[in-house]
Image: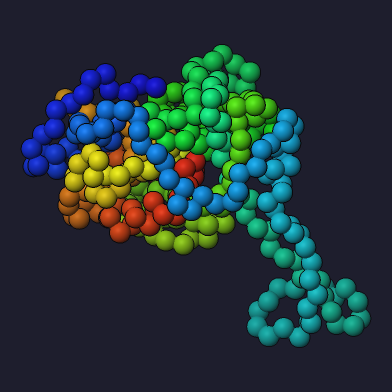
Amino acid sequence: MSFANAWVTTQSTSSAAARSRGSCARSRTFGGIQSPFRGNSFEGTHDRPGLPIHPVWPGSLLALVSFVVVSAGAAALAPSTAVGRVALDPPASPTGWVRVTTPRPATAHVIAEVRPGHALALRSRPGGRVLARVGSRTAFGSPRALGVVVNRQGRWLGVTEAGVGSNRVVWVDARSSGLRYARTRLDLHVDLSARTLVVRRNGAVVRRLSIGVGRAGSPTPTGTFAVTDKLNGSSYSAAYGCCILALSATQPNLPAGWSGGNRIAIHGTLSSSDFGRAVSAGCVHASDLDLRYLMRTIPLGTPVVIRP
C-alpha cells in the first residue's frame, strides 16, 4: 500500500486546523499531523457488527447471498374491501379474496474478512496478475474487512483496497481458505453536490448528515469504496474531531505543496462552518455527534458510495 514514506512534524494549532481541511494521511498520519503511536496498534471495533460471521465453502457464496433474501415473493391473503388507492391483483376466486405479494427485502452486502495468519492475493481482473498481497490487519491495525462491490458468479469477488488499483475494483478468489464472510444491511451514500451523507438500512434512509467535501482542484473521489478503519481522532489531533472512519479510497489530486498523505476518510473538523461547503483536500468532514453515531453503527467493510 502506498503510504507516506516519512513522519511529518506536528504543526501549531492554527496550522493543524488549516491542514485538517484535507484528505487524511497515509499509514498512521492524517493531514500531515503526526500520530503519537508508532506501531500498528489500532483495533477496529465492531460496536454493531451486523449479522454473525459464517464461513463460506467453495462454490457456496451464491447460497450465502441468497440466504438473506428472506421470504422473497411470499404471499399473503387479504380481503378485497381495502379502503383508499391500494393496487391489488385481480381476485383469485369469486370469494372476493385476493393474493397480495410481500415486497422483496433488500439483499445484505457481503463483507470479506481476511483470516488471521493468512495472506490474500489482490488481482487486476478475475484470474489476472497479482497486484498485491494483504494480511489480516490494515496499516492502522484494524481487522481487514473488504467490502464486496461485484460478485462474478460466486467465484471472483470485486473489492476495493486503499493504495491498490488506483480507486478501481481489484479481485479476490472467493474460494480462498484465507477468507470468511460477514453481512450488513447498512450502506453510506455521499452526495457531493448536495453535501450530504445518508445512512441507509435495507435501502431506507435512517439518518442524513450535513458534511463538508473536497474543494475545487482536490475534489472528493467518486466511486464505491468501503470503511476500512475506525480510529480515535484524539490519537492524532483535535483537528480531526472525536473520530476517523478511514475509507478504501485515495486522493489522486492532492493540492500543490501538500505534505500529508493521500488517504480519504470521514472525520471531524475544528470549524462547524465546513458543513455544507467544499472546503477540504478530499476528505469528508462531519460533526462529532454524527461521527459517534457512525462509529457505533457502521461495521468495518460497510460500502460507501460517493457520487458527484
